[in-house]
Every structure is written in C-alpha cells, then in structure tokens.
Image 1 (cartoon, rainbow, N blue to C red):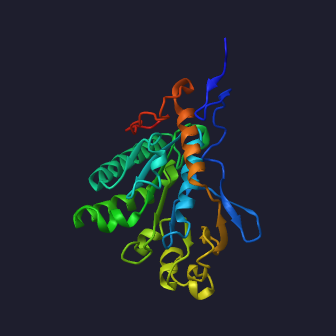
Image 2 (cartoon, rainbow, N blue to C red):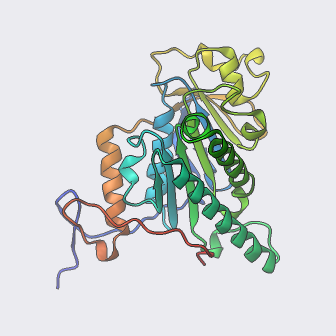
Length: 295
C-alpha cells in the first residue's frame, strides 16, 4: 500500500510533520553585520510600525508564516484591509477583517482562555507555561491597528478594543499567548506610551518624523541617534529593533514574495488537515477557539 500523499503543489511527497516550535527562536532577518536576528516571540509581545511600504508587513508575514508551520500553534488574525494576513485565513482559529464587534468578541474570548490558563498554572504552583506542558501557543497578530483604535466602529467600541487589547498584552505573555501588532500611523493618539511599553519588542521601520520613531521605540532614543526617520526610503525592510534591556540595533527583515506567502500558507493548511488530504481549493474549515486549556 502506498504511503505517499498528494502535496498541494501537485507532486507526490512523503508527508513530513512540522519540526518547528514557537518555543524556539524565530528568525526574522539579519543585522548590519550580516548576523542572524531571532526573537523569542512565545514570551514576548512585538509592536512594529512605519510608513506605508517600509516593510512592517514583511515582518508580520515572517511571524505568521513561522507560526503557521509550528507544531501545536494557533493563529488569531486581525487585518483591517484583509489582504496582508488573508493568505492564512483558512488555518486561523479566527480571522477578523473590518468587523470591530467581532474583534471585541474575539478579544474577550482570548482573555477568558488566558484566565483559565493562569488558574491552571496556579493550581500547579507555577507562574508561566513551559514547552513540556503541551499547551498550544496562541499567537494573535493585528495588522492596521489604527483601524480598530480610531476608524472602525464607535468611540465606545474603539475604547473597549484598546482596553481589551491592553489586557491581553499585559497577561498573555506568560501563558503562551503573545501579541504581534502593526500600524502605519505611529503617533501618540494611536499608540499611547502606556500601551507601547507593554511590548517587549519594538521595531521601527522608516518613519516620516523623529517623533514618530520615538512613539515606537520610546521617548529619547532619537536624541541618542536611533531614529527611523533616517532610514533611506529605498531601503525597504530596514528597521531599528529594540529588545528588552538592550539598545536598538539595525536590522533587515527577511522578505517573502506573495508567491512565497501563499505557498507557505497552502503547505501549512495541507499539514494541518487530517491525513494530509488536499481539497481542490486547498482550504480547511477554520477551527474554533477553546474556552478551556488545550492540555
């Protein structure tokens, strides 16, 4: 009996399960010396911003692509314009487009899951999860953050969205529920310092002003020479990356073409299907978030 399965790209391959984990360092690009740059996303939140076309969507797609291929990892995606994270819609537990009421519902559910995980940790006399717990990592990625904070819905809904997001960013880190967020409008009215400072990783792509750069990295960094306004507008994907307890460093984010992104998303969907079956359009039914721990 044949042991091969049909690959989404049309060739017969022996199926290989994912060998990647969100608990491993995530490669995102290189620094100015050509050395690999990796992030410990599972226990850190990431905030990124920059002018349109500067490269922030490239970083988001690096995170989404890696998470999609990691074992025991679930995606919750928010994309106000649909197309940046849309390739992963069929493997996401939830996908929120321009419906802020749905977004609010999803954030409430995520906070419920986080609360349940902390109660489990408390019962087991622990303070954060470990790889050996076999709890799924739930990665929430939000593109066009400004859409949910300032554009969609009513003022009351926008305020609730910010409050719920602040809660998730505050408590999600230690229970395996990191948040990655991006906006192309890095201004104080979009990202308050109290929200920004909850993100352990901050990545500033080219900004039009020194002030916009400081909104992402933190006040005072531009005066010390770390300003994203100095990045050449032709150098797409270049950014200043700030990590906890470090100074910003120049990086160049790895670039994925549209063909790369869809190939990865199709392959991830194929891997996640029972028995690696392949439908004609390579889509899978979206799963539903668990209300309890995924132990």
